[in-house]
Image 1 (tube, helix red, strand yellow):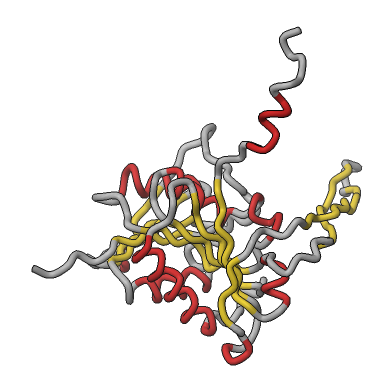
Image 2 (spheres, one colour; image 1 turned 30 degrees about the vertical axis):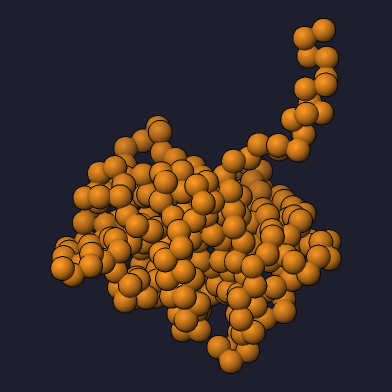
Length: 260
């Protein structure tokens, strides 16, 4: 009896036409049966937003409705895409969800703003092993060819070994030639942040408006972080958990006089 192929859900936050997701789809077709549910327009920086005050449309793209490759464009957020894929579109729960390949970094603090990672996290909430993939190149013309080996290998390892409940993987790939990448480094999220600045302007009607800008500041000198790995030519893999409880502070917090 032929072994059933893995069922793979593919999504992203850059939109269904982005080159990154087209590369990811191609790689996943080598590993299993693919269903794509992705935003119909860019959703970068949406974090884990969901649509609650508007309708959601999710339309099949007819040219991609072969048995092993179905695609749907969704009007919602990346998290919406995963929810609607699992609840309404897929015949069974996928064996894995892969999100990306994002145009730009999702390392360090960026993980909390990322639509790419929020889609992966939403899959994790649904009990699905999940990975978010990002390339440190923001260009729409980014070359994803050197990502293929690492995306395929990491996905195969997750399919074979699974992930603990409540954990997803955040994978970032440096913008280097394939020959320059030194391998894969597992580590932690660097303790870094954005120092924001708002460029204030006034429109012709006299109303003030703002453009958000800022500088990424990393003061974490550890050599076990995602930022260190990327700066030193490695693909970074960080296990991310969506339980945000600060467990180490519970005992001390219980000593406060809340009920006095």
